[in-house]
Length: 304
Image (cartoon, rainbow, N blue to C red):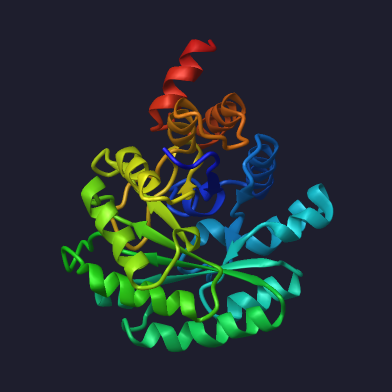
């Protein structure tokens, strides 16, 4: 295993909570973010400036960032947020934030359901958003969803994923996160997709992987990506999450499960595993259900 250190990009407060039936109070979300940061997670995506009609769970985005500003001071501006379009960017700029992400689709059907745009039209929407963000000195991350399969279209051709992903990245992103939105990916598919992006001229340092655990393959897929040289992985504390526009999307790869595997391989993450577990147990109590993470269940039980 060549990697000595892996960066975990924590998406629990945004991707984790956006699909919860329970609307979490703003103060609880703020504590969730601050506890994850205190546990040593180097990047914590705080929220999304999406229209409240589409994702009501994140309707308090501006209030949350204000509260985090009160609690964390200037460092709150370093927390990344998702922006769906230029209106979302305007809100991020007003708050002086430094890192945004845009969210594209590798398939036509999901682009229309999630973005209200066609596969080709999405680039025209993202281009001015990314350009304005870069002109303002912001860092931009690009997510591309449905990279391994789509609930309406089935399997997604690798060359289509590479084409969409590279076009999104080339708009001006610093990193491209490849999403297995419905969790159908396999270790072999991961290897093939990473190789295809590298063959198209992208570096493994420019790629991140975002796995869902629908078929129980998220950890195996992360191990496969690690073998291909990927060193940034998206994960969600306690395995929270899903996708509001894809009912077959279950929870994200749990941060704790990923950390347990990486530490077992001798790979550094800077993350205090017990602190993340305690945070996930605490959040599970607020949500009124246990965490789906196997490591959370095991360690929480052993600590009782």
